[in-house]
Amino acid sequence: MIREKQSKTGAWRAFGIIVVILAIVLLLENTLKPTSILFAVLKKGAVYSLVAVSMNLLNGFTGLFSLGQAGFMLLGAYTYGILMIPSEARDSVYYIYGGSAISSSVPELLERLFGETGAGTAVSLVLGLIIVLIAAGLVASLFAWLIGLPVLRLKSDYLAIATLGFAEIIRAVFQWDVLGRVTNGANMLKSFPNFNSFNIKNAAGEVVLRLSTFVPVLIVSICVLLIILLINSSYGRAFKAIRDDEIAAEAMGINLAKHKRMSFIISSFFAGIGGALFAMFSTTVQAKPFTSAMTYEILLIVVIGGIGSVSGSCIAALLYTASSEWWLRFLDNEMYVGAFKVPLLRNGFRMVVFSVIIMIVVLFFRQGIMGNRELTDVFGSRRKRLKKAQKEDKNGGEDNG
Image (cartoon, rainbow, N blue to C red; front, side, top):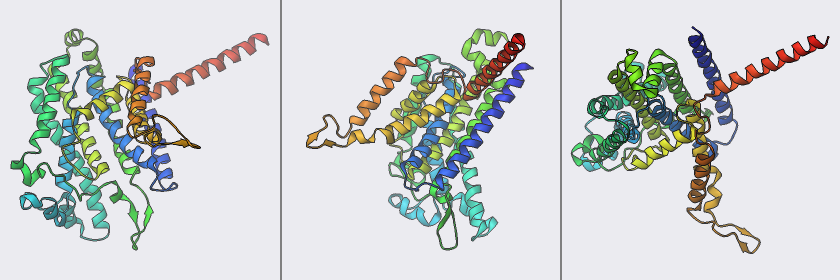
Protein backbone atom coordinates (compact mmCIF):
# COMPACT_ATOMS: atom_id res chain seq x y z
CA MET A 1 0.00 0.00 0.00
CA ILE A 2 2.80 2.40 0.98
CA ARG A 3 4.73 1.51 -2.20
CA GLU A 4 1.70 2.19 -4.41
CA LYS A 5 1.15 5.54 -2.70
CA GLN A 6 4.80 6.49 -3.25
CA SER A 7 4.57 5.45 -6.92
CA LYS A 8 1.46 7.60 -7.47
CA THR A 9 3.11 10.55 -5.71
CA GLY A 10 6.23 10.15 -7.84
CA ALA A 11 4.15 9.97 -11.04
CA TRP A 12 2.26 13.16 -10.13
CA ARG A 13 5.52 14.95 -9.34
CA ALA A 14 6.93 13.83 -12.70
CA PHE A 15 3.79 15.14 -14.40
CA GLY A 16 4.19 18.50 -12.63
CA ILE A 17 7.85 18.77 -13.70
CA ILE A 18 6.90 17.98 -17.31
CA VAL A 19 4.17 20.66 -17.34
CA VAL A 20 6.63 23.26 -16.04
CA ILE A 21 9.23 22.27 -18.67
CA LEU A 22 6.65 22.51 -21.47
CA ALA A 23 5.55 25.96 -20.31
CA ILE A 24 9.16 27.20 -20.21
CA VAL A 25 9.90 25.80 -23.69
CA LEU A 26 6.78 27.43 -25.18
CA LEU A 27 7.66 30.77 -23.57
CA LEU A 28 11.30 30.67 -24.73
CA GLU A 29 10.40 29.63 -28.26
CA ASN A 30 8.07 32.58 -28.72
CA THR A 31 10.38 35.08 -26.99
CA LEU A 32 13.90 34.38 -28.27
CA LYS A 33 15.07 34.46 -31.88
CA PRO A 34 14.07 31.29 -33.77
CA THR A 35 17.62 30.98 -35.15
CA SER A 36 19.09 30.50 -31.66
CA ILE A 37 21.14 27.31 -31.35
CA LEU A 38 19.33 26.68 -28.05
CA PHE A 39 16.32 25.32 -29.93
CA ALA A 40 18.40 22.93 -32.04
CA VAL A 41 19.96 21.62 -28.81
CA LEU A 42 16.55 21.26 -27.16
CA LYS A 43 15.15 19.35 -30.17
CA LYS A 44 18.06 16.94 -30.49
CA GLY A 45 18.34 16.64 -26.71
CA ALA A 46 14.65 15.73 -26.48
CA VAL A 47 15.02 13.03 -29.17
CA TYR A 48 18.11 11.58 -27.49
CA SER A 49 16.32 11.70 -24.13
CA LEU A 50 13.56 9.42 -25.38
CA VAL A 51 15.97 6.95 -26.98
CA ALA A 52 18.18 6.95 -23.87
CA VAL A 53 15.20 6.33 -21.58
CA SER A 54 14.04 3.49 -23.84
CA MET A 55 17.52 1.95 -23.65
CA ASN A 56 17.58 2.47 -19.88
CA LEU A 57 14.27 0.60 -19.58
CA LEU A 58 16.00 -2.43 -21.08
CA ASN A 59 19.58 -2.08 -19.80
CA GLY A 60 18.99 -0.33 -16.48
CA PHE A 61 15.63 -1.59 -15.26
CA THR A 62 15.56 -5.11 -16.74
CA GLY A 63 19.28 -5.85 -16.83
CA LEU A 64 19.42 -6.87 -20.51
CA PHE A 65 22.50 -5.49 -22.28
CA SER A 66 21.30 -4.61 -25.78
CA LEU A 67 23.13 -2.57 -28.45
CA GLY A 68 20.47 -2.56 -31.15
CA GLN A 69 19.00 0.89 -30.48
CA ALA A 70 20.32 2.45 -33.71
CA GLY A 71 18.66 -0.33 -35.73
CA PHE A 72 15.26 0.30 -34.14
CA MET A 73 15.70 4.05 -34.64
CA LEU A 74 16.43 3.39 -38.32
CA LEU A 75 13.20 1.39 -38.66
CA GLY A 76 11.22 4.21 -37.08
CA ALA A 77 12.91 6.90 -39.18
CA TYR A 78 12.30 5.07 -42.47
CA THR A 79 8.68 4.32 -41.51
CA TYR A 80 8.12 8.01 -40.89
CA GLY A 81 9.84 9.12 -44.09
CA ILE A 82 8.11 6.58 -46.34
CA LEU A 83 4.62 7.32 -44.98
CA MET A 84 4.92 11.12 -44.78
CA ILE A 85 6.43 12.17 -48.14
CA PRO A 86 3.68 13.99 -50.09
CA SER A 87 2.65 12.59 -53.47
CA GLU A 88 3.91 15.59 -55.48
CA ALA A 89 7.43 15.12 -54.07
CA ARG A 90 7.67 11.33 -54.49
CA ASP A 91 8.78 11.38 -58.13
CA SER A 92 11.68 13.74 -57.36
CA VAL A 93 12.71 11.72 -54.27
CA TYR A 94 12.50 8.28 -55.94
CA TYR A 95 13.68 9.46 -59.38
CA ILE A 96 16.46 6.81 -59.57
CA TYR A 97 13.93 3.97 -59.21
CA GLY A 98 11.24 5.46 -61.44
CA GLY A 99 8.84 6.41 -58.67
CA SER A 100 7.64 5.18 -55.29
CA ALA A 101 5.72 1.99 -54.55
CA ILE A 102 3.49 4.07 -52.25
CA SER A 103 1.57 6.83 -54.02
CA SER A 104 0.24 8.99 -51.14
CA SER A 105 1.22 10.05 -47.65
CA VAL A 106 -0.89 9.41 -44.55
CA PRO A 107 -1.85 13.11 -44.14
CA GLU A 108 -3.05 13.19 -47.77
CA LEU A 109 -5.26 10.17 -47.15
CA LEU A 110 -6.71 11.89 -44.08
CA GLU A 111 -7.25 15.13 -46.02
CA ARG A 112 -9.83 13.34 -48.13
CA LEU A 113 -11.79 12.77 -44.95
CA PHE A 114 -11.40 16.24 -43.40
CA GLY A 115 -11.24 18.43 -46.51
CA GLU A 116 -8.34 19.76 -48.53
CA THR A 117 -8.00 23.28 -47.09
CA GLY A 118 -8.17 25.21 -43.84
CA ALA A 119 -8.66 23.26 -40.63
CA GLY A 120 -8.84 19.99 -42.55
CA THR A 121 -5.20 20.25 -43.60
CA ALA A 122 -4.03 21.05 -40.05
CA VAL A 123 -6.07 18.22 -38.53
CA SER A 124 -4.84 15.74 -41.11
CA LEU A 125 -1.22 16.75 -40.45
CA VAL A 126 -1.52 16.35 -36.67
CA LEU A 127 -3.54 13.13 -36.92
CA GLY A 128 -1.17 11.82 -39.58
CA LEU A 129 1.81 12.55 -37.31
CA ILE A 130 0.24 10.64 -34.42
CA ILE A 131 -0.67 7.66 -36.61
CA VAL A 132 2.75 7.49 -38.27
CA LEU A 133 4.63 7.83 -34.97
CA ILE A 134 2.63 4.90 -33.58
CA ALA A 135 3.30 3.00 -36.83
CA ALA A 136 7.04 3.73 -36.48
CA GLY A 137 6.98 2.29 -32.98
CA LEU A 138 4.97 -0.74 -34.07
CA VAL A 139 7.33 -1.55 -36.95
CA ALA A 140 10.30 -1.39 -34.58
CA SER A 141 8.50 -3.52 -31.98
CA LEU A 142 7.52 -6.08 -34.64
CA PHE A 143 11.18 -6.56 -35.58
CA ALA A 144 12.05 -6.66 -31.87
CA TRP A 145 9.53 -9.47 -31.38
CA LEU A 146 10.96 -11.42 -34.33
CA ILE A 147 14.60 -11.17 -33.32
CA GLY A 148 13.75 -11.40 -29.62
CA LEU A 149 12.61 -15.00 -30.00
CA PRO A 150 16.16 -16.31 -30.57
CA VAL A 151 18.44 -13.59 -29.11
CA LEU A 152 16.76 -13.15 -25.72
CA ARG A 153 17.93 -16.64 -24.84
CA LEU A 154 21.43 -15.16 -24.79
CA LYS A 155 22.90 -13.25 -21.87
CA SER A 156 25.31 -10.40 -21.20
CA ASP A 157 27.89 -9.79 -23.96
CA TYR A 158 26.38 -12.37 -26.29
CA LEU A 159 23.05 -10.52 -26.30
CA ALA A 160 24.86 -7.23 -26.96
CA ILE A 161 26.76 -8.71 -29.92
CA ALA A 162 23.59 -10.27 -31.37
CA THR A 163 21.57 -7.02 -31.19
CA LEU A 164 24.50 -5.00 -32.55
CA GLY A 165 24.71 -7.42 -35.48
CA PHE A 166 20.96 -7.02 -36.07
CA ALA A 167 21.34 -3.22 -36.27
CA GLU A 168 24.12 -3.50 -38.84
CA ILE A 169 22.15 -6.04 -40.92
CA ILE A 170 19.07 -3.81 -40.94
CA ARG A 171 21.18 -0.84 -42.05
CA ALA A 172 22.60 -2.86 -44.96
CA VAL A 173 19.19 -4.26 -45.98
CA PHE A 174 17.57 -0.84 -46.15
CA GLN A 175 20.23 0.28 -48.66
CA TRP A 176 19.50 -2.71 -50.91
CA ASP A 177 18.49 -1.68 -54.43
CA VAL A 178 15.78 -4.35 -54.56
CA LEU A 179 13.85 -2.31 -51.95
CA GLY A 180 14.63 0.96 -53.75
CA ARG A 181 11.01 1.81 -54.62
CA VAL A 182 10.20 1.73 -50.89
CA THR A 183 13.39 2.78 -49.06
CA ASN A 184 15.06 4.69 -51.93
CA GLY A 185 18.13 2.47 -51.54
CA ALA A 186 21.26 4.27 -50.35
CA ASN A 187 19.74 7.64 -51.29
CA MET A 188 18.05 9.89 -48.80
CA LEU A 189 14.34 10.39 -48.18
CA LYS A 190 13.33 14.05 -47.90
CA SER A 191 10.51 16.58 -48.41
CA PHE A 192 8.41 15.21 -45.53
CA PRO A 193 6.99 17.38 -42.70
CA ASN A 194 9.52 18.36 -40.03
CA PHE A 195 9.19 20.19 -36.72
CA ASN A 196 8.85 23.58 -38.47
CA SER A 197 5.72 22.31 -40.23
CA PHE A 198 3.82 22.62 -36.93
CA ASN A 199 4.32 26.37 -36.50
CA ILE A 200 0.94 28.15 -36.63
CA LYS A 201 0.70 30.71 -39.43
CA ASN A 202 -1.84 33.38 -40.38
CA ALA A 203 -3.47 33.87 -43.77
CA ALA A 204 -0.43 35.83 -45.01
CA GLY A 205 1.88 32.93 -44.18
CA GLU A 206 3.52 34.65 -41.20
CA VAL A 207 4.28 32.56 -38.11
CA VAL A 208 2.09 33.70 -35.21
CA LEU A 209 2.92 30.89 -32.78
CA ARG A 210 6.11 28.84 -32.91
CA LEU A 211 5.74 25.20 -31.93
CA SER A 212 8.76 23.65 -33.68
CA THR A 213 10.49 23.00 -30.34
CA PHE A 214 7.37 22.57 -28.23
CA VAL A 215 6.05 19.69 -30.38
CA PRO A 216 9.07 17.34 -29.99
CA VAL A 217 9.37 18.16 -26.28
CA LEU A 218 5.63 17.45 -25.85
CA ILE A 219 5.82 14.11 -27.70
CA VAL A 220 8.93 13.03 -25.80
CA SER A 221 7.36 14.10 -22.48
CA ILE A 222 4.26 11.98 -23.14
CA CYS A 223 6.40 8.97 -24.05
CA VAL A 224 8.68 9.39 -21.01
CA LEU A 225 5.64 9.75 -18.75
CA LEU A 226 4.24 6.48 -20.14
CA ILE A 227 7.58 4.77 -19.44
CA ILE A 228 7.55 6.15 -15.86
CA LEU A 229 4.03 4.79 -15.33
CA LEU A 230 5.18 1.42 -16.68
CA ILE A 231 8.21 1.36 -14.37
CA ASN A 232 6.01 2.15 -11.36
CA SER A 233 3.53 -0.60 -12.29
CA SER A 234 3.64 -4.30 -11.40
CA TYR A 235 5.39 -4.96 -14.72
CA GLY A 236 8.11 -2.47 -13.84
CA ARG A 237 8.63 -4.16 -10.47
CA ALA A 238 8.92 -7.49 -12.30
CA PHE A 239 11.56 -5.98 -14.62
CA LYS A 240 13.57 -4.78 -11.60
CA ALA A 241 13.27 -8.19 -9.93
CA ILE A 242 14.70 -9.85 -13.06
CA ARG A 243 17.55 -7.33 -13.07
CA ASP A 244 18.40 -7.95 -9.42
CA ASP A 245 18.16 -11.75 -9.38
CA GLU A 246 16.66 -13.92 -12.13
CA ILE A 247 16.52 -17.05 -9.96
CA ALA A 248 14.70 -15.27 -7.13
CA ALA A 249 12.35 -13.58 -9.64
CA GLU A 250 11.47 -16.92 -11.21
CA ALA A 251 10.93 -18.43 -7.73
CA MET A 252 8.39 -15.67 -7.04
CA GLY A 253 6.41 -16.71 -10.12
CA ILE A 254 7.67 -14.16 -12.65
CA ASN A 255 7.74 -15.53 -16.20
CA LEU A 256 11.28 -14.58 -17.25
CA ALA A 257 10.88 -15.14 -20.99
CA LYS A 258 7.60 -13.22 -21.15
CA HIS A 259 8.82 -10.18 -19.19
CA LYS A 260 12.18 -10.01 -20.98
CA ARG A 261 10.41 -10.11 -24.33
CA MET A 262 7.93 -7.46 -23.13
CA SER A 263 10.72 -5.14 -21.97
CA PHE A 264 12.60 -5.64 -25.26
CA ILE A 265 9.52 -4.90 -27.38
CA ILE A 266 8.45 -1.83 -25.36
CA SER A 267 11.99 -0.43 -25.42
CA SER A 268 12.12 -0.93 -29.20
CA PHE A 269 8.69 0.71 -29.63
CA PHE A 270 9.87 3.95 -28.05
CA ALA A 271 13.21 3.74 -29.88
CA GLY A 272 11.22 3.57 -33.13
CA ILE A 273 9.32 6.72 -32.15
CA GLY A 274 12.66 8.32 -31.29
CA GLY A 275 13.93 7.41 -34.76
CA ALA A 276 10.90 9.07 -36.37
CA LEU A 277 11.53 12.22 -34.31
CA PHE A 278 15.20 12.11 -35.33
CA ALA A 279 14.08 12.06 -38.98
CA MET A 280 11.97 15.17 -38.32
CA PHE A 281 14.92 16.87 -36.64
CA SER A 282 17.43 16.11 -39.41
CA THR A 283 14.77 16.70 -42.17
CA THR A 284 16.16 13.75 -44.16
CA VAL A 285 16.40 9.99 -43.71
CA GLN A 286 19.37 7.92 -44.77
CA ALA A 287 20.81 4.69 -43.36
CA LYS A 288 24.32 6.13 -43.05
CA PRO A 289 23.93 7.96 -39.67
CA PHE A 290 22.39 4.95 -37.88
CA THR A 291 25.68 3.23 -37.18
CA SER A 292 26.93 1.50 -34.04
CA ALA A 293 28.49 4.86 -33.07
CA MET A 294 24.98 6.24 -32.54
CA THR A 295 24.16 3.35 -30.20
CA TYR A 296 27.37 4.01 -28.26
CA GLU A 297 26.35 7.68 -27.93
CA ILE A 298 23.02 6.66 -26.43
CA LEU A 299 24.71 4.12 -24.14
CA LEU A 300 27.15 6.80 -22.99
CA ILE A 301 24.23 9.10 -22.15
CA VAL A 302 22.60 6.32 -20.11
CA VAL A 303 25.85 5.66 -18.19
CA ILE A 304 26.50 9.38 -17.54
CA GLY A 305 22.92 9.95 -16.37
CA GLY A 306 22.78 6.84 -14.21
CA ILE A 307 21.76 3.30 -15.09
CA GLY A 308 18.28 2.90 -13.65
CA SER A 309 17.33 6.60 -13.61
CA VAL A 310 14.87 8.12 -16.10
CA SER A 311 15.64 11.65 -14.91
CA GLY A 312 19.36 10.98 -15.25
CA SER A 313 18.97 9.87 -18.89
CA CYS A 314 17.02 13.05 -19.75
CA ILE A 315 19.47 15.37 -17.98
CA ALA A 316 22.51 13.61 -19.47
CA ALA A 317 21.01 13.76 -22.99
CA LEU A 318 20.58 17.53 -22.75
CA LEU A 319 24.04 18.05 -21.24
CA TYR A 320 25.65 15.76 -23.83
CA THR A 321 23.94 17.54 -26.73
CA ALA A 322 24.60 21.04 -25.39
CA SER A 323 28.29 20.28 -24.74
CA SER A 324 28.98 18.59 -28.06
CA GLU A 325 26.88 20.90 -30.26
CA TRP A 326 26.98 24.27 -28.51
CA TRP A 327 29.09 25.08 -25.46
CA LEU A 328 32.41 23.77 -26.80
CA ARG A 329 32.01 24.99 -30.39
CA PHE A 330 34.49 27.84 -29.85
CA LEU A 331 37.29 25.27 -29.44
CA ASP A 332 37.04 24.43 -33.16
CA ASN A 333 37.94 27.98 -34.21
CA GLU A 334 41.33 29.69 -34.17
CA MET A 335 41.59 32.47 -31.60
CA TYR A 336 44.01 35.36 -31.21
CA VAL A 337 44.80 37.41 -28.11
CA GLY A 338 46.34 40.47 -29.68
CA ALA A 339 49.02 39.13 -32.03
CA PHE A 340 49.35 35.87 -30.05
CA LYS A 341 47.60 32.79 -31.46
CA VAL A 342 46.05 30.57 -28.80
CA PRO A 343 47.59 27.09 -29.26
CA LEU A 344 45.65 23.87 -29.95
CA LEU A 345 42.42 25.60 -31.00
CA ARG A 346 41.54 24.10 -34.37
CA ASN A 347 38.87 22.02 -36.10
CA GLY A 348 38.27 18.83 -34.11
CA PHE A 349 39.79 20.01 -30.81
CA ARG A 350 36.28 20.36 -29.40
CA MET A 351 35.82 16.57 -29.40
CA VAL A 352 39.17 16.07 -27.65
CA VAL A 353 38.13 18.32 -24.77
CA PHE A 354 34.65 16.77 -24.76
CA SER A 355 36.17 13.28 -24.43
CA VAL A 356 38.31 14.43 -21.49
CA ILE A 357 35.24 15.89 -19.77
CA ILE A 358 33.38 12.59 -20.24
CA MET A 359 36.33 10.68 -18.73
CA ILE A 360 36.33 13.00 -15.70
CA VAL A 361 32.57 12.58 -15.21
CA VAL A 362 32.83 8.79 -15.44
CA LEU A 363 35.77 8.71 -12.98
CA PHE A 364 34.19 10.95 -10.33
CA PHE A 365 30.55 9.89 -10.81
CA ARG A 366 30.85 6.12 -10.92
CA GLN A 367 27.07 5.64 -10.75
CA GLY A 368 26.28 8.54 -13.06
CA ILE A 369 24.89 11.98 -12.29
CA MET A 370 21.70 10.67 -10.67
CA GLY A 371 22.72 7.09 -9.81
CA ASN A 372 19.44 5.21 -9.53
CA ARG A 373 17.54 8.19 -8.11
CA GLU A 374 14.93 10.39 -9.80
CA LEU A 375 14.35 14.13 -9.61
CA THR A 376 11.10 13.44 -7.78
CA ASP A 377 13.05 11.53 -5.10
CA VAL A 378 15.46 14.45 -4.71
CA PHE A 379 12.63 16.97 -4.30
CA GLY A 380 10.79 14.59 -1.98
CA SER A 381 13.84 14.02 0.26
CA ARG A 382 14.50 17.77 0.46
CA ARG A 383 10.90 18.37 1.48
CA LYS A 384 11.17 15.67 4.16
CA ARG A 385 14.40 17.19 5.50
CA LEU A 386 12.77 20.62 5.64
CA LYS A 387 9.76 19.28 7.53
CA LYS A 388 12.02 17.38 9.91
CA ALA A 389 14.11 20.50 10.56
CA GLN A 390 10.98 22.59 11.16
CA LYS A 391 9.64 19.96 13.53
CA GLU A 392 12.94 19.84 15.43
CA ASP A 393 13.02 23.65 15.68
CA LYS A 394 9.44 23.66 16.97
CA ASN A 395 10.16 20.95 19.52
CA GLY A 396 13.33 22.77 20.60
CA GLY A 397 11.37 26.00 21.07
CA GLU A 398 8.74 24.24 23.17
CA ASP A 399 11.42 22.63 25.34
CA ASN A 400 13.11 25.98 25.92
CA GLY A 401 9.73 27.51 26.77
